[in-house]
Image (cartoon, rainbow, N blue to C red; front, side, top):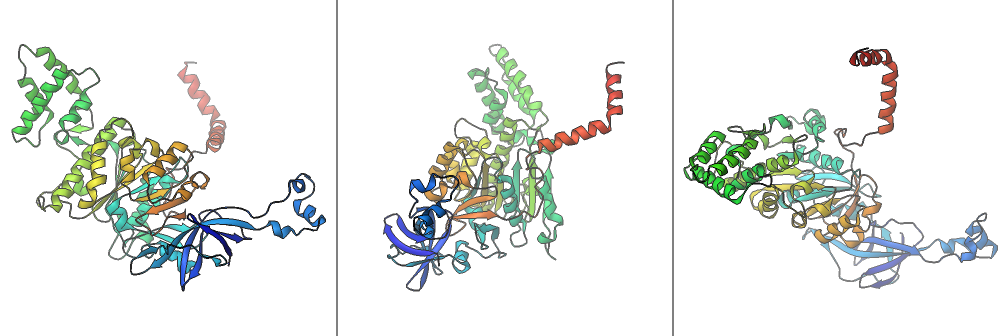
Length: 521
């Protein structure tokens, strides 16, 4: 037992306890044989020492109180404000709020395993489960529903250094376990996830009938087929701010002429010939201007025939990591746009029976999951990005066609609010910036205001998990990863400086000789 209820109002109730309890901690009371789960919001001392007791720095307030004949224990009681969550109804599969607060004098207990287990929608290790960590201050595991994550999207939001990429790694590990075998693609702008390749050789992921596969796609192997670009994509690549309306009109005419001639797949040279065909004495300078800008399409990323092989990237039990580090940001957006656009078309066409086994790169007969790191780059709150439109389309309509999305960002205030609000499960870690906190509060309906106030004080590896994948929001300690987390760690600058100094002292004669040779001594 922790304490006793002494008051209640429309926002919850208060109880008295001599124990120190953290905000967000779960407690419970019993009513009509049912254990009612509650959440601690905040506390304040029930009694405080007179200021005079605190002014002597050499004597403790307890000693002063004893001198005056007062019991120090009278000042060790706290009044806690708490809110009622409810009792778990097995038939409904959710917590039911009793619509009343506990009466004065009701005993309040610490919530045990028998109550906390109902926070999770599925059991640990069951099909469609994702064990993400433990309830903070408890050994009770928090298990998310993979079905709800994939069908209704998830966001992972955290400040730099709070454990964002680490947590994504934990989620990916769960998706690659034998009880899920998910087809997962990570769009990786910084090359942080290469260590996830370890899953294919770790015993925790392998059974007699299953072994996960990992495919890491390096930047030099990522190609965009010219015919996969829309006319708007072409113009955004070619236009440096000096492309006139006449140039854009003529280019659109050439593009649509090629498309209307049943050329679903065309090469750069064929498009160039269509542009040349529009040349006459009145527009020759304009055509030359278009062709000069057309040269930007000769970058290594563009190809006449190679493209993003969807069927090879999305396979059951396979993790595909698209490492786009080192690629210009606008081209990263373009790659994401083309990939997501083709994926949406493939899943929509497969579900509507437009594509079958004969459509080699368009037939994907199962749901897929895509993780977008640095999501604020690809769906910014203000301004445009080449990938923003299709990303919003998938977030709003992808549920019908089995495309799950995970948006990962350290700056939610820079992420499109509509996109964030479409993620119906939220993993939110330490956020200090007030603008980011406000954006989370506005965009995430299921996260209570009380827990949002805890964001700045969360330690590394702690998170608020809320939304449809669990039964009630909870403060969670993220479990330890099975794979390495070398890429995502911050650099230990002093250690690296010291190592460099040792290296220089050890190789000083060789380094001096090289330097003298360079300057011609």
